[in-house]
Amino acid sequence: MRHARSNMARVKVLPLVGAFLLTALAVATSAHPDQERFSFFLASTPESVERLLRLANLQDDDVVVDLGSGDGLIPRTAAGMNPKLRGWGVDINASLVDQANRLAREQGVGDRVRFYQRNAFDADLRDATVITMWLFPELMQLLRPVILERARPGTRVLTSTWNLGSWQPDEVSTDNPPIFKWIVPARVAGTWRWDLRLGGRRVRYASVKEQVFQRVEGVARAADRREVLEDVTLRGADLAFTLRITIDGMGLTTHMFRGTVQDDRIIGTVEVRPTTGTSLTMPWNAERVDRSDYFAPTGLDLFQAPGATTP
Image (cartoon, rainbow, N blue to C red):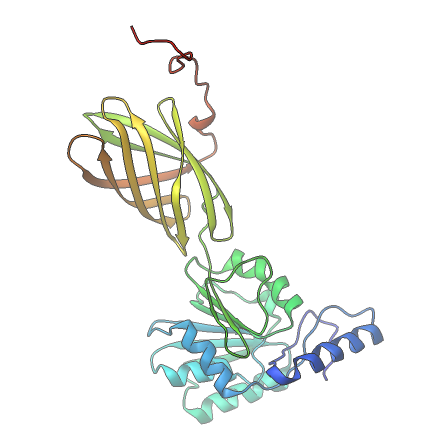
């Protein structure tokens, strides 16, 4: 076992020795109560790595990044499975980094795969499209906010044996050991607004969205009417939802929004289906705002007391 006072070293976990590793970690931590969380390196099997990469659904333009790369097996295997993708890894152990780069050259993928001595918490993940980790669960949860902060929406994240806590995976391979896959979600929480041209006039919409990882709920307002967003889905940067709300002159109108989140904008289309009349599809451009009309005063114009009749 390798002890480390730094944030992390690498572990590759074989299914049959998981209990041993956890016991070893407990013993090492109790023996060195002043050290931070760490993992140590234990080589994984090529079969388990191939399962993990098959779930990643590798593409030609992928950049596979392994946090705590050890001897580099995951990026090296990915490069062997797809002759066009690139990859890199970081590990805190200099000798393992040297070994990983040597094996990549011997395998003939050294021009596409590189390894660096670096703390995983310092890794620049902006070019990553696939991120892999095979570490003790506490370390992977400590790295979770780093990934959500630095990786682009749509990046696939894969782990083996242990998951990422309350962030529910998008896919799971339940063979032994289990493999988990997540899609990094765009940040859509907050207040948004957009305009649509309906019935010859401009209609202003205001929306408030709440988000827990890839799960999103929201509400929207058009004029003085408010409704709850339905069927909200967020996969990477792709957002979709349905809004059924009454529009003056059109009656109850169904809106089906589809768009791509681009920082503080959403670019896409909306299909508008009035109760009567012809459906139409038009561009949809929403922007994030600091102050939302959703919270503006509503007044009593729409209120009708029970039993009252319209004159």
